[in-house]
Image 1 (cartoon, rainbow, N blue to C red):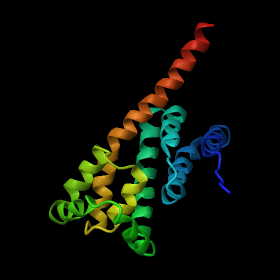
Image 2 (cartoon, one colour; image 1 turned 90 degrees about the horizontal axis):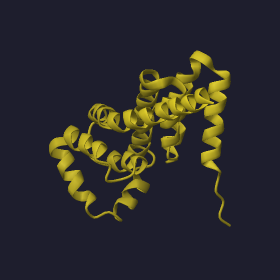
Image 3 (cartoon, rainbow, N blue to C red; image 1 turned 30 degrees about the vertical axis):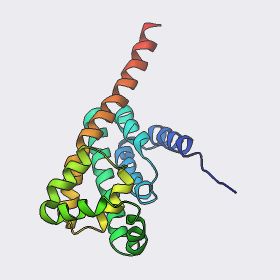
Image 4 (cartoon, rainbow, N blue to C red; image 1 turned 90 degrees about the vertical axis):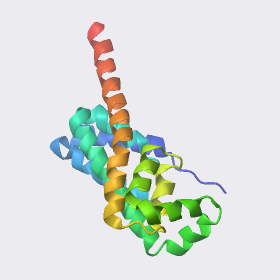
Length: 173
């Protein structure tokens, strides 16, 4: 039997709970929520939009950026340790990944940064695939953080604009 969770509804309800109950602690809790979502490979774009919506650009962007980087690092470490055999078995499905691993050996930071800026692979998949390459943890974290900034600012701006447009519609009534 196929079992799926209503992830989108759960995340929306979570964002509402943050807004209604957490006040100044909201950005911290939002950032921490990225960790289990990223490790479990759950798309967290709705959290990124929610960060911009709930907290505006500066605070939402920082919370999203830090949370996604910590979550990506947690998934990377899991893939590098106890999940390594599983990740390596899945890499066989991507023959071009061997070329990426060789490129990372030569220019780890630059390749990770480019992979984050130009998302050829889904964010969560990339966390695990990069975990079996020779890139160092510090290079991975810094390149991931910098490379994901464009996406976080874009989604944060969208979330913030959604909030502003709702306010405008309400104001004009």
